[in-house]
Image (cartoon, rainbow, N blue to C red):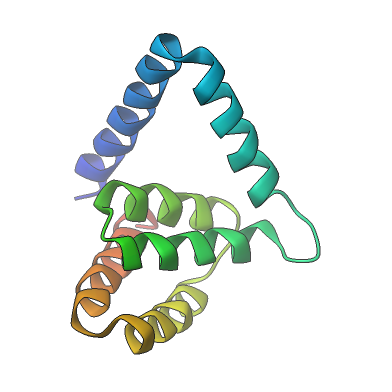
Length: 113
């Protein structure tokens, strides 16, 4: 599963790059927003990425769940931290939240293997 997820992450990045070429102004601004929103501040970048995972779970965006789970891992988030965030997500999102939360945890485990 790890190879499949890494391939999907590569595809996500390639799709963003293609959209960046088609709409350089919009995507440059969006990438600036992403960088600004997730940089270290009073909250660590890992916490901000965990929040992004929770929001992606709520929105039901599978590619977003994968991308932000990988970013949370890259910034040092632990499995335990992700599980706690996902528990809050399940509280707020019920059944659909639980389904995408299980995907986020599965992605974390596969990417961290």
